[in-house]
Length: 279
Image (cartoon, rainbow, N blue to C red; front, side, top):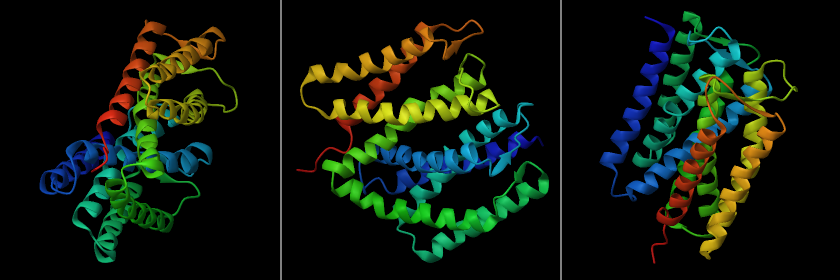
């Protein structure tokens, strides 16, 4: 079996766990809110791995898709942190698992990590298995404590934080996919590898951009909703004009802008139709 097969097996398990939880615990909250929580639970490992892997090169994924090691890391990151981690988070919050359940999940993760290390499809640099255990316990504890806050206090700062982190995932997701498919990249020179430098640059950029986007989407007047489109699409056009955003391989700036507009529209719909006040 190829290395990618085992990564995809974990992805199927993660998505399956999430679907199982939503189906059996749909009485806890609306489907739309479950989906927002899934995105919220995805954003936490995304941002955490951005720090420990993207900035500090703590370990390496080896799914066997690309020759470039940072492209390999990007593939492994997208597969596992978008499926397995949010899947187990939903299991914990949906079934109210306590310390024993979290300990079992942590043990299962460590077993998988050990097997991946032995198989040579995952490699530690300065990272250790104990760090994975601590990180997972903290992550699941945050998810367990945040879900009732998100579900019961559907206004103010808790609602903004939840939708902001969910929106970071929605807005950022097309960028690494286009990067991996060779359609565009960001021409910044602070890291030797352009996969790594592109990802670091655009994630910092989009974290700030998403705050502005969601701030204006939260405003009541309809005309404020247009501001994020002007800022975000204008920003990408500006980066292209300055030769920072490089379009290639038959791709077109118009395609990128349409894709960007689509992600913004999803964020607008999330703000309008999810986590609505109970009263």
